[in-house]
Length: 458
Image (cartoon, rainbow, N blue to C red; front, side):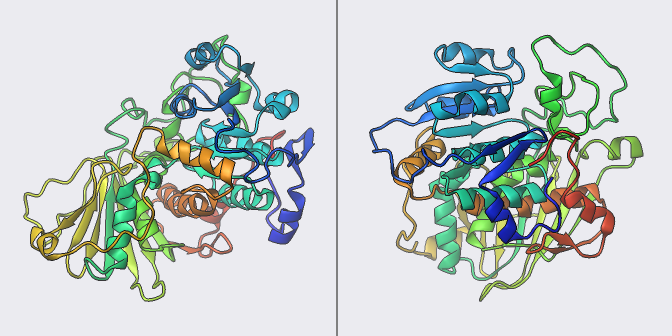
């Protein structure tokens, strides 16, 4: 990992020669990333790393372009995509893909598990490739900042995979807030049924580290799957789905869903960095608490005043916990399984996840008396793959995508400081977001930039 005392100026200068691993250094190739180089009718050449899960959907949303290279550490997990694109070059190691085929593609999709987002992203940026990376942008707070600044310095077009940011719902919510539809907002409540409900959490482990050591499947390169995380024996509980529940690989329900559900609040309220955060969880067994995320938790963020906007207390609930119904609504009002409530002085706004289903302005008396402001934020054509297509458009015309890393990076940082608070259960963490420092807890602060396994670096 990069040293803690590396200055931002020195880092930006260093992005011309970023290390891909301890034994491989590759110079940036910017020959193919001149913004606006491609005409709207010219197709991008795209490579994808991590193609068996969300990557499959991201690739399908980009079939308007040329899919020329595919990489996955598990040939069985990626088999359907390999078969769908027989002319694409196949790789197991993303580093080999860049070494042997970098001149063949303009852009990269990264949809690996959370703990390898940063290393794949930095390799892409080092080679001057446009980048679509799944959410959360990285596994640690330090990684997020490094990737965000590297993308800025390289001038590549980026997009984080929080699809709801390409919805019209999020634009309407921001316009309502800016127009004072519900008055000043002092509270936000957000929740998810994960990990109890919905794939890939249906078999959520909430367990201590497995002691069994079954053989590694022939189709899987376990060393590459582990990547920069501490090595541990293979076990099928980790791959392909339940890795999200383990600290070393995933970011839990908040990391999984927060970049979707908290996106409207972060966007509409200009939240930025919280001043402090604290979590309460269902953990009570040390062996489990040290390995996996809890079955349910409540995370409380506090955001200071931002310009004319008052301070905001934002509370996150998961594991099918939900907030109380606001007083302006009937007591039997049914909240969706995933969503958020903005509580203003005059009313509330309720929305679901991923921009689906539209937002509601309540109570009905307020909705009936309120006239929506004129649309001030350009709308997006609502169709399948709109988020990926927005990235493709950005790669061609040079105008940033809706959730470029300039936006997606800070959003992810806000989410991940809450994830860190979950691991520090019941401890209030004072957060200096500018310097990325937890100022009152050295143990927690060490998790802002955890060490990489020997042989791996950013």
